[in-house]
Length: 100
Image (cartoon, rainbow, N blue to C red):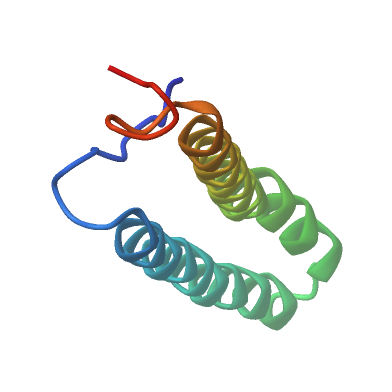
């Protein structure tokens, strides 16, 4: 199973996922501020429509892809943890019920 940028054994997966979530919030706030600056500049010069187009082409994809990547990473972690729990339930424990 691929977990992307997450590393097994480095630190617990929920902590790594929380760190990436904080980075995702930063990738939301910084382009959001830049978008507000662009929009206010274009509005000051009487063209808020052009400002919205610039914001939607430059800043919105950064935020959108950051959150999509976060959701994919979280889904991979959930799937990995489900598979790990399932494997622990199905594997025989040594020394019990005739397991070697």
